[in-house]
Image (cartoon, rainbow, N blue to C red):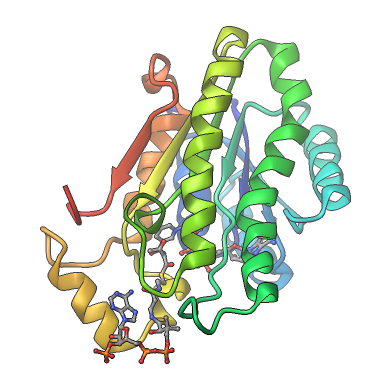
Amino acid sequence: MRLQHKVAIITGGAKGIGEAAVKRFTEEGAKVVIADMDEAAGNVLVQTLTAEGKDVHFVKTNVADRESVAQLVAETIDKFGTIDILINNAGITNDAMLTKMTAEQFQKVLDVNLTGVFNCTQAVLPTLIEKGAGKIVNTSSVSGTYGNVGQTNYAATKAAVIGMTKTWAKELGRKGINVNAVAPGFTRTDLVAKMPEKVIEKMTSVIAQQRLGEPVEIANAYLYLASGESNYVNGHVLHVDGGIMM
Ligand code: CAA
Ligand code: NAI
């Protein structure tokens, strides 16, 4: 059990990569709070995992809203007594070519993917600093490291997440807190399902492994960075993308 007795918050945990992470973390003994906007999917996941004897709790959360995030932290401490791990996984796309992207489209993605990560990290910090220990894992993307057609807004946030990860690693390392990021490649979730088929084919052809990633393959990277196995890994960006551009 790599996360025995640890309490983890996983944002965007109701679906996709986050859902896979909730499952992997509970398999490894963690108590998990699923922080997601999607109440229906979150409740189904809680029912399934509770029936298997796992310790999970759902808090309806909008990571872009600081009051909602404060409520998430308060409910987590109320339910499980502490916080050890934050997985900043919630994220959205709103793709358009730069010539067509509206200011609203640009801002909406910043609010969730960038401000949301800032909000959640700031909200858990008093607990982690008091303990002198903690793990924060942020979610970047292949789009943030290499850019991607149609993703001005999204790529900007995912590159910014890397800057924040390295800054926080420097600020918080001395306080016993590790901050790292995972940069997934194209992974089989609703985000990729929205892409035009011809673009998925084009993208798959440039992946060394010639296939999309599976959510659990990203969740396993979160798990490594949340566990004691990565105690001397700090400020790192772990690319899990089948070898897309090297
Ligand atoms: N990479 C390379 N070429 C791309 C591309 C991409 N990601 N997206 C679009 N193109 C190409 C299209 O193939 C098309 O080429 P042709 O003119 O030769 O046919 C050209 O760009 C224009 O595309 P559209 O005709 O589709 O233009 P549009 O204005 O109708 O739509 C779009 C633009 C909304 C960006 C649409 O093309 C699209 O959704 N593309 C996919 C964008 C993408 O890759 N999103 C990733 C989602 S998954 C994710 O975000 C997770 C992650 O972290 C990677
Ligand atoms: P998904 O769309 O399958 O799941 C995202 C989850 O986040 C959903 O349950 C959704 O309800 C939740 N969510 C959305 N906005 C929220 C908000 N404001 N507050 C709280 N929860 C919110 O997406 P997926 O693919 O699982 O993505 C997870 C993370 O991985 C995202 O940060 C995404 O950018 C990143 N990523 C995904 C890749 C992919 O190919 N699927 C590739 C690279 C990065």
